[in-house]
Structures are given as structure tokens and as C-alpha cells.
Image (cartoon, rainbow, N blue to C red; front, side):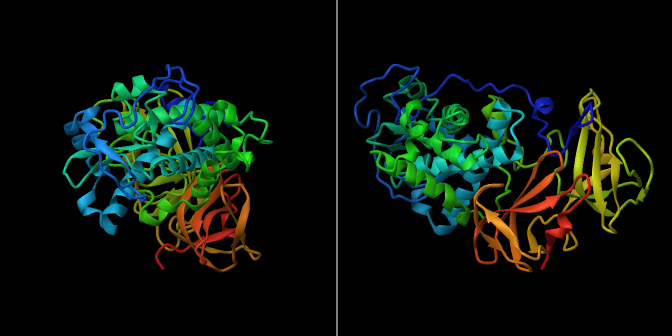
Length: 472
């Protein structure tokens, strides 16, 4: 890494993001008995007016009670309108719409949270933490928080005889102050509270005796769940198949592997209906979305893999330090292989690109002056085509022996993406100083997972592994 620059594959959160405002002291789960709040003997279905049932389906888990017991309906209806499911309109298409909108919020919230708390978290850790949180919401509530029931009242999901509140099932016996204050009534408040609990155990799991490596993120997710569900002393509970709550750990792991919500998500990169990070940080006027989380450095920097078009002629340099290989002409397209940002006040950006005719080099697109980026004067983002180099939507396997499909990037192998087969690409993850590319895919046989697809630095190797086929 050059002094004064931030490499594209290394998260720039340490310079782009301010410290998170979410507290770091909570360490108790919905079912745990360890809490900084005093345990209360709360009656079953306390403050549960006009209770209704439900079904163990996404967005419709039982039971539910009037949300107005803990917050104003008008606020929830105005702030989270896209995240409310109507029981009388719960068609297949409406449930899929709801899941896709909630998926965007969970995706952005988990990525935003871990990057705030842990600026140097690797892209792979961010990806698995995000999946762990989506799994947690499935395990706890089937992605259920607000519903409008058949009585036309806004309801809040209440599980475990009414003690579990909302999306992440915050238990009123162990978190009474949080429940009574309305924090768990609010969707983002409920999620942020649970994120703090889970993240504490995620970090504890890295040092747990049942993990041999901190970067075994699948096992780390399981350990963090055991502690979330049973308290810190239960962090290795998942290894005991005879434990009285083993079915909880097994259920969590099965959901982690299956990612059943993805069957309902047509566009996994769909922008959230509001700026999730802004809401989590207690901001105001958070209506605009911050977009899908990914390898974006923030501040408008385009991610590795993004197609861009030159709006003016730009020098194409062989090295970041200078030299001139040629000119990238206005109107021509290129795909980003890397980016670097100066850490001084200018935040000058440079992109390493591969042009349509195969030239590779660095372009400079200016910096930030008076809080305004100048890069839009020089380049614009656009969709790629079949001649793309890093696959963004579809790709063909070029490695003669195929490529192993893994549960998580670098994790356990679960199958093979065969040579010359076509894959669907759901996401691109860029990791390490050599920009190692991992693709989240669905194989020709329908298997979901991650494949390694080469690197972009110092010399690109992607073409040995995959070829993009965007528009076939």
C-alpha cells in the first residue's frame, strides 16, 4: 500500500466513516439470562392488545399485537411503508416484494454496522457477517416485524408467549427498559440493538475454544448465534448435539446454508427504500438510499468491476506514479480493476481500468473540492455488456478442471462449477491487496455459493478462471 493512498480492495472505512453511535455495552440475547438490565417478571403477552395469529412464513410469523402499545402508528407507516406486509394482500408477489425490500435493509444495516465497529474488517468478513444477520432474522422471526392484520390495525410481531418483540425478538424479561422505551418497536432500533448483541458475540467467538481460526467465519457465525440465543457462556453450545437447545443451533445453521430468502429476491442489489446507515446513526432526512453494500469505497467512489464511460479524453498511465501509455477517448467504456484514494484533504481518486480494446492503465479523475467530487466531470457509471471482463450478472467457467463452489469465500467446498458451464452472478467480492475476486453465484445445476475468480493486481488473472457473458 502506498503511503497516503487507500487501495481499492482494502476497506476505506477508517478514513471515509465516522465512529458509530450505536452503544457497545449490550451483551445479551432474547433467550439469554445475562444482561446489564435487571430481569423483570413480565406477564405473558404483556401489552398485547388485539392479538392475532399468523403462519410460519416470511413476514407472517405468529403472533402479533397492536404496535401502538409501544410507538405511534403514523411514524411506522410513514418511515417504513415498504417494510409492512398486509395480511389481506399477502399474495406471492406481495410477499416477494416485501422480502426484497427488507433484504436491502438487512444487507445495508449489517454491512454498515460492522464497518463502523471494525473499520479494518475484510470484505469476506463483511459478507459472512451480513449473511449471519440475515439468518438471525430468519431464525428469530421469519423476517417479520410490522404487519397490517385483517382488523386493519398495525401489528408488531410477538413471539415466545409475547415476550419476544419484533424482527430480532428482543425479550421483555431481560430488556424491559428497551422494550418500554419503544426502542424495540422501531424497526431500525430493534435491528441495531440486536446487532450490538450479536457483534459482541461475533468478536468473542474469534477467541472461543471451539474455533481453531478466527477467519473460519461459518463456525464463528454459529458460535455467535449460540451466545446470542443462550448467553455468553453458551458460545460453544453449537458443538454439543445433545444439548437441550441443540435444535436451535441446528436450525440456525440450516437457515445459514439454505438462504431461503434469496428465492424471493429477484434483485439482490436493489437499493433500500431509505438511507439505512443514516437512520442507524440517528440522522435526519434519511429518505435517500445509500445503495447496495459492496466494494464501494464511499464518497461516490465506484467499485471494482463497475463499468464506466469517459466523458472527456483521459491519459491512461502504466503506473500510479506517472508515465503515459496512451489516451482513453471520450465515449469509450472500461471496467474498473482497482482504485486508490489519497488520504489528504483532496481525496484525489485514481482508477485502474481495462478498456474495451484490452488496454490496462491508471486514470486520474480529480478529488473533492468544497465537499463536491469532480469525478463526474470525467467519467460516468454504466451497465456492462457481453464483452465484460469481470462477470457482473452472467459468466462462463474457463478453468479446465472447473472451480470449487464454497459455502463462504475461502470456506468449505460444496461442489464444482464445471468447465464451460454458465453461472449467474449475484455479487462480486474483492479481497486483499492483490484484489482477489470471489463471485457469489448460482451454478448451472442450481447450487448457490462462492467461487474464486482470479485477481486484478499486480497482473490480472481473471481470464484464466471466468469470462463474462452479460447479455446472452
